Amino acid sequence: MNYYSENTIVYLDGKFIAATEAKVDLYTQSLHYGYSVFEGIRSYRTVTGETKIFKAHEHYSRLRISADALNIPFDYTVEQLIDATYQLLEQNNLQEAYIRPLVYSPANMGFNKNTESHLLIAVWEMPLFFGEKLLRVKTSSFERPNPKAFKIHAKAAGHYVNSILASQEAKADGYDEALLLDSKGNVAEGTGANVFYEKDRVLYTPAEGNILAGITRATVIDLCHEFDIPVVEKFFKPEEIRGADSCFYCRTAAEIVGLESLDDVPFKLKWEGSLGYVLQKTYSNLIREHKHAQTTFILDRDSVELAEVETNHDAAKLVGTTTSNVVMTQPLTGTKS
Ligand code: PMP
Image (cartoon, rainbow, N blue to C red; front, side):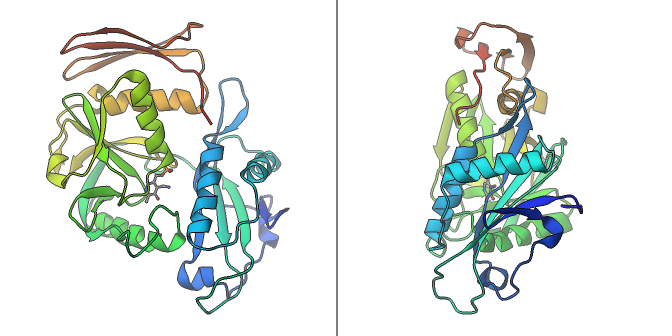
């Protein structure tokens, strides 16, 4: 994959410069010890043709929280960075883009604190991280980093050695992705994604504590509340997921992607009949600010009928509920960021 060309502009330490001109110090602590923090953000072309960075505030706030957690100086405001990113997108002529801010250290072969840091923002076009197909996932032999050994709520580069090892192991064994457990044997997350599973029209996701609780995960939970879809955050073992009704991963780069199987045990529902499918479609409307898209779902035990209609009506309402059938009408009112 080509991340840049001769025409690409990056934002480095407050300046817009050609990617081909940008230099990094080979003696930075970040390169040698994985001591840096980053974000993965997406921008979209909305239905009205504007460029909109999805959850910009949440992502840049998390970047600041990550830098603080690792004692890395962070000398920008969230608003400055959002503004710089919109300018960068424009300079690169991009609307639908993946945005990668990285805060890294100066030259320092020791372990001591630095008085300054560098900030890079790069943007490029990136298809959905996992594509569109359902994933075959394997429980990893690698555990997620122990929260007592790392600041796991921080998006720190060094943590991703764990992700790389787990992902490579799953692929070498013929799977698309890995599912990692925590040190107590509870389900934690994917290599760079949060996980939800569905059982009897209720969604379950690992509680916070051993995961990077993603911005997409929070968005999914918000959508569940809007839709009156029951969602439970709790600790659970992988046996609960294997053979459940359905399951999905979510992350900014991949949005919402369904799983076909875990450890070769298939999920019971067809993806198109799952709550994950409803949320995938709804998320897709939300990120492109389909403000007047009213999405009607008719859920029964093993199928979802889905119809999307244009409307100006914008009051969310539950149309009808029975024990086996839930009929919901959900207009979207845009992002909350
Ligand atoms: N967990 C990990 C370990 C991740 O790297 C990511 C991707 N940032 C996520 C979860 C999902 O986070 P988000 O939805 O904020 O992209």
